[in-house]
Image 1 (spheres, one colour):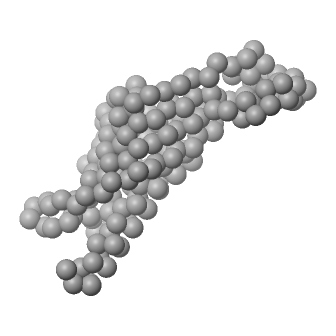
Image 2: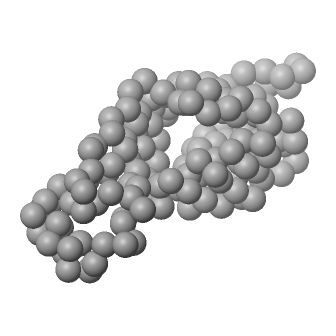
Image 3: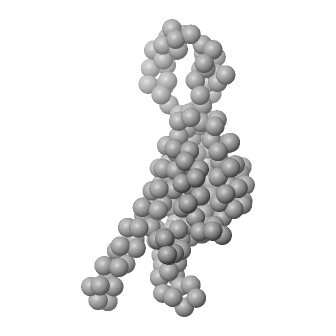
Length: 176
């Protein structure tokens, strides 16, 4: 390989890594317009293993917008990224596959009917536990990215949820 080809491969890897990071940020921030822009026009996402839908990026963005209203705090962590390049229509390296693990802690909204002093008392009683996520899940993503005139875009995202944990809430913490 020439240095120019090696540099192009490194730049592609960085661009794809940035695309995957942007995916996590758009979901965490609830920026559903930006979420849709990460995909090719025919892009799809499959959240069926996590109780969601398998549909176009636009349809999934709508579903996510409703589903994520339950969790005003969410923090997607996507790690252990394994990237391989493939071929599409005889063009080398225009297709990329990324396998990556995720952990996603989320919180339900706090009880807006509870008084501030009751919330403060519950927080003191629970100590560090009061900041623990109410819902946490983990699994593996399979991303397929395609090089386009606008840069790398997602063609397919498949979520394979492997586990989830729900922390019971006390009466003072119950969502409204």
